[in-house]
Image (cartoon, rainbow, N blue to C red; front, side):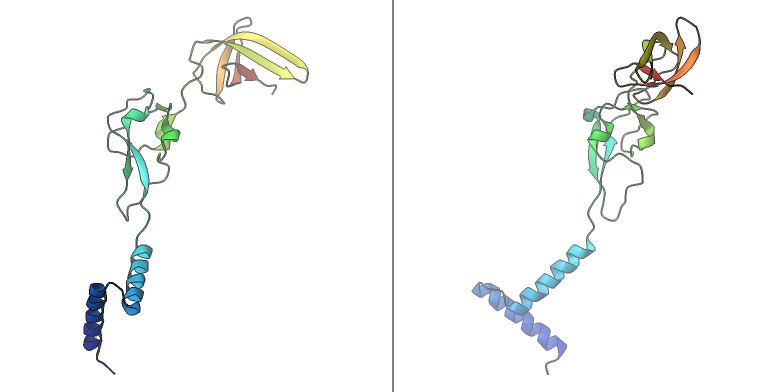
Length: 174
């Protein structure tokens, strides 16, 4: 039986001869495949995050031109609840200052307001086949799906309603 050093020297010589001859011996190829598989299993897929390339101030709409896509170093993991896709941020508004080179937490952005504070809106109440509409003024801003307070222009009463996608307010019986 050959010693480990002579076996290693034999394999090295066989590999050199095979490379010169234009082929790869099966032993060398098997070791190369094992090494490649070990390297592939040790590498993790790098994560991608979005960061601003300039300061984004509160109330400012986030645009794709101010974002930079960054691949994290192997072994680094992104924190939970940070933006990773441009679709998550396009058209959103910053709630707080977003600094360049820093992660963008999803809690630091919001949908753009669909109705502003003080805007004249239509208020609708629907129950079965009955629909009642009234004019109102919003007392707070809101995005689609948000619950906002609205003052009925005719009665002066303050009611809460849900902002609809078309900018109207839907109220329900409580």
